[in-house]
Image (cartoon, rainbow over all chains, first blue to last red; front, side, top):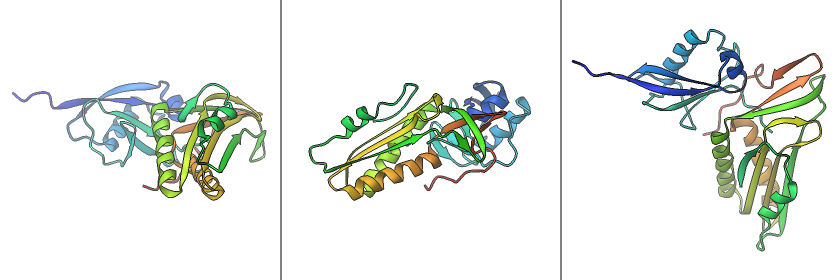
Length: 87
Length: 143
């Protein structure tokens, strides 16, 4: 029998995404090999209002910027970063 | 010192932090909240951060500044939560042997903060509120 080939990642939502998700954190089960892009697609199903049309997002895994095609690992902390506006 | 804080920022604390016997200059930059933006009358600003990563990015900016210019010490403090009009939202202090490096490094730091540090500003204005930047897109970090 094949073992459990999945993983769980932790997602944090901030700013406009936090408001659109209606929560500041979530955990999500994914399949091995799933990427940041796959996670984003899955999250849209849970939070239909999450996508903000017309904005450029950045992606962070374990507090480092990554690309959308970054594969995820079990227990990764993933954050979708809408346009930053500090200063 | 590269931190985010919910407390009002004490400029003198940053100046004290970067004071160095080797330094002949200290440059400070204070970002303050303005009462108007794009024709809107701003009532208040509310800052939110992915705090752990924001502090990491601030430290990365400090390390890059030290690579680019001969600075002695640097400190950046960014305020979070509601910030009233006229108050400091961010303070940068840099010391260096000669003034050019301190000016250049502080300029570099504020520009980088606006590009890569995961901090967001919600503007509360007369008649509504908006997350700044959500209509304009953003630049990728230069790395």
